[in-house]
Length: 88
Image (cartoon, rainbow, N blue to C red):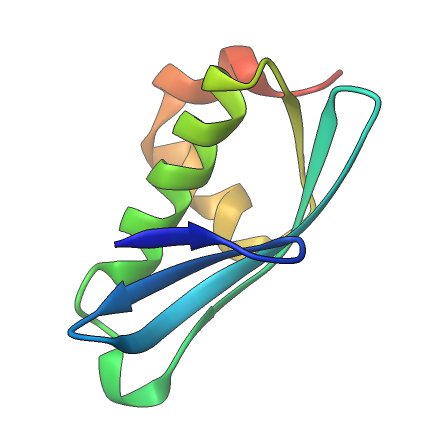
């Protein structure tokens, strides 16, 4: 389950926060700042799932994205289909 709360997209499994993405948004632009996965959940693909979800959220809400987070930047190289959302 995903939940937006105070400029965070939180990923929850079995009532436990697995990780979150911190972002800011202003005037139709979303800056992705950090992707954080709790250490016990690292390596399970949750960061990719979180990033996919934030891109879907941005698309549905007509945001362009500035990927400041290093994980998001590397994820975009593997998912070029989302390049159209990048703010230039």
